[in-house]
Length: 313
Image (tube, rainbow, N blue to C red; front, side, top):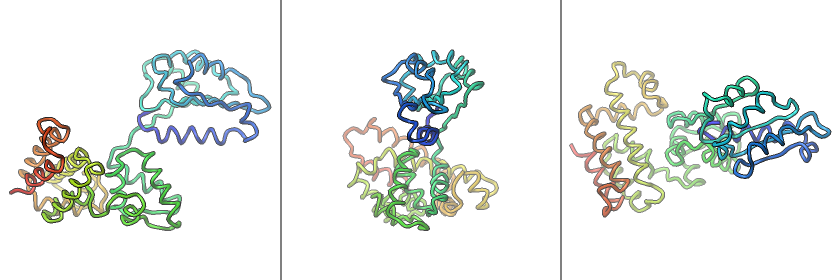
């Protein structure tokens, strides 16, 4: 159960593909869907005995569709059929830990809670996924994926699998690989915009904003504002640190050490008072990016106005 479906699917698929031999699955493996069955149907199937096999496997997918009645499963979990492996995939939410079902499952089964990763954890997750497969990825390339795909691990994994088909083992995935095969520009993205603004590289920042204005569907303003807000909020935190050594900065801001110099450089260009003003400005533009008070203004024009406000002295 939990907000992050990636690991729920991984565990369920592993059980589906390994508990029974292929020849045993025809009679002893059943996949049910929450929207199509009742809890009574699940219990009825779970109480069956296996045919010519040690176990039967019953997998319930999208069990969150049974959220109103899922507690009816509690009596079965108190005394489950020992020859049945029952897998319940309860995605995007959690069963109530105060109620009987959760308490009996803790005693007679296994509960795995799949928590959503924070954005600053996803780049490390990408590296961990690639490492056993004999691939690596540059920090910038990993950040590009996070900024383009967010924290959806399934989407990111799908793109990584495409790259693994194309690139030979031992490859370090670079920004160029991301641009050529996934379609994320290595020069015109939120990562590069953040860097240009941090360095007060006005020309580069305006080039990126103009690119965003011409390609609004691929570069939604709400995402740009959110990422800049996170950056300047972290910069505010940086200014408040007494120990500004690279190791402590990386730890305190929860960022890859590779990016520490960006924050050190940005702090020289943006003193604490200026950072506070930028954070306030970004809050205003976050509201405008969602259509409040700026219905007649294009996102491209809003971005240009935002850039003027950030870079003004």
